[in-house]
Image 1 (cartoon, rainbow, N blue to C red):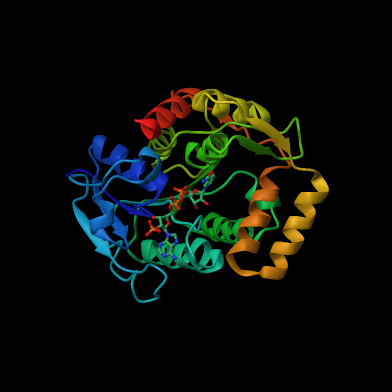
Image 2: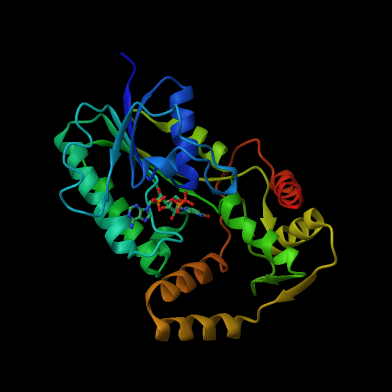
Length: 291
Ligand SMILES: NC(=O)c1ccc[n+]([C@@H]2O[C@H](COP(=O)([O-])OP(=O)(O)OC[C@H]3O[C@@H](n4cnc5c(N)ncnc54)[C@H](OP(=O)(O)O)[C@@H]3O)[C@@H](O)[C@H]2O)c1
């Protein structure tokens, strides 16, 4: 009988590719989603539909304490790409607490392993997102269940913001001229995660095949859009002031501002992995938009 893998965050950018990859590799997939109807439609940024990929659905709100009961019953593997990005919710409730309840459920169900999609450099971050993820990573590391913690650089989905800016005729660049990232495509990250599934515990930093400065990402976006584009560098003081102002507003604005400002300050590269290149992704996305 093929192994049964539970995927939480299955409707997200990475979660969708993870479900597709696992089903291609012969796993039976149980997907935890808030809406099956949305799951069976194509996702944002080219991410695939889950139609025909899922053997069992668990539909509901994973942040509700009673919901996770039974979600891991009979499963061999659990993978979580669950986390707050654009959603209106507290990262503490989702990235930490919901993942923690899922881990407890996985332990009670004696699954063989638990894989968590984290974010690179989370342990040194001070934003609520990185602190929530680190709190969960620490709980997972203490677990006696075999665990894999995958720490990716930026995703192609997030880089699409540069395309949107380029379409408007300007690209805002973060202050640190030399900071480098290695954006990774969801399909490549899913394959990396699936390769790590198993009984060996560990933590891995991973990025895509191209190491780029934000300036280079901006230029790739401008070239893909094919129209004149101004590059405007945001002064460091403006970022600090923006985070300060966002903290006064509070809520989601503050959470996102703190998280983004962290990402602008240090290289996030990791192991170079994958076949998808950002230049091609931008070119195709720009063509699809103008078609
Ligand atoms: N984006 C990046 O560049 C980047 C880089 C490194 C690491 N990461 C991390 O990688 C993980 C996956 O990222 P992604 O871009 O795939 O994120 P995503 O597209 O926003 O997907 C997140 C998943 O979590 C679920 N979720 C979020 N808030 C929820 C809530 N309140 N209740 C129930 N479900 C909720 C979403 O469900 P719905 O579809 O129903 O909203 C979705 O399935 C995240 O933890 C993210 O922090 C992201």
